[in-house]
Length: 81
Image (cartoon, rainbow, N blue to C red; front, side, top):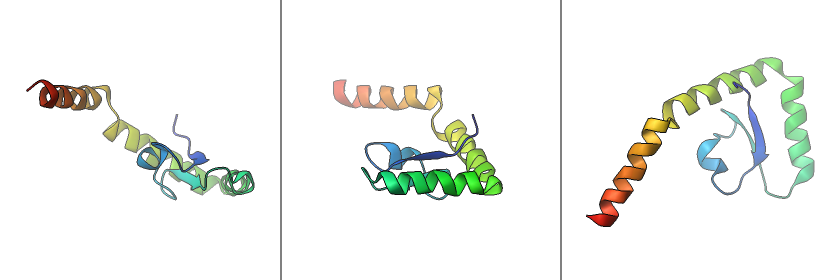
C-alpha cells in the first residue's frame, strides 16, 4: 500500500519495520508515545510518503512469496536431511 507503519516494537515487527526508515516503532504498551508517533507522521506528509515508499520497496525486496517458500524449503531440508 505504500504507507508507513506506526506500531509497538514487539514480536516480529522490529524485523519487518525499520524504525525511522519504513515507519515508527514505539515501546510496547506506551499508548501516549504511539499516539505521538501517529501525529508526527500526520503533520509531515513528505516524511510519511518517503517512509511509505521505503516500506513498500522493503516488502517487495524481502518478503516475496518466492523468498518465503525458499526459506521454508531450506528449513525443511535441514530438518529432514
